[in-house]
Amino acid sequence: MSPLQKGGPPVVDSTQNATVRRARALERDRALRDRSATYVAWGRRIALEALAGNAPLRQAIVSPALSEADDGEQILGTLGARGVPLVHVTRRVLESIVEGSGDQGILLLVSRPEHDLAGTLAAPTRLVLAAHGVQDPGNVGSMVRSARGLGASGFVALEGCADPFGSRAVRAAMGALFGWPVVSAASSRFFDSLRSTPFQIVAADPAGKEPPADVDFVGPTVLLLGSEGVGLPRRLLEGAGRRVRIPMAAGMSSLNVHAAAAILLYEVARQRGFECPPAERRPPRRSET
Image 1: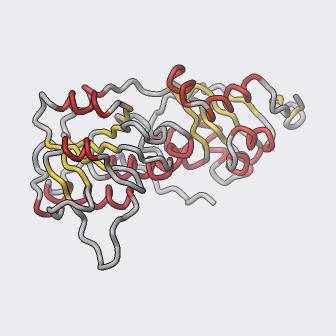
Image 2: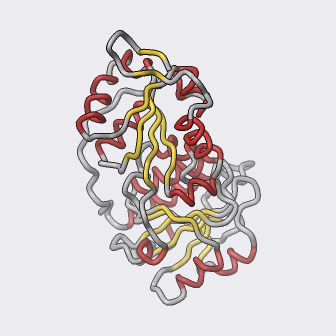
């Protein structure tokens, strides 16, 4: 270790430090994230959202780049006031955990909330977004963000999906994960759980016959979307009560899965009079570079 400045906190300058190695393992190992109920979130915008949402923070790893940023002192001050353990590292060491985090100057270890499938389906909003085989973490995180923003009560990642708690998905979700139901489940268990509920299952299917506006979304609804390339497998399509097709211009057969999810979520919100849960009022944030 070396001093940050005279009289300042010690700074970790080894990538083999135990805390650094633990954070790097969490970043790379989904099974470890699941076992430890801990995940990695990085970046100043994410840190501000985590603090505004009272996310359960286990530890913060920071580099000098944070104190050099306009909002760095605010973040450091709030972390200190809340008693979040701080580990100071060099920019190079932070970058060794997650590429891109070094310039942002902060990485958080966050406790994963305990949400289950039954509780997600019982939520009063009665709209759930489920995805199968969506492998791009950016799409998974963006779907979570749009689902929460448009009034869904939870997100279910079925088999084949990227981990919603991987740092790239967390970053794309931009704070939507904090305190909101996101669960992973096998599709067989998910469908079994729905059998005794009033939920209708509406699947996105390029070969579907109904446009979204023709489907009644006012009642309890699960929106089900498939992978970016091949869509939903036949067994899941056959388990859905309705199949919707998003009308597109001639020559186009599909949309990015997040774009499709956002369109369907918006239609549900429109039919329900945009009666979404009110979002917590927060000051606007600067965009990160």
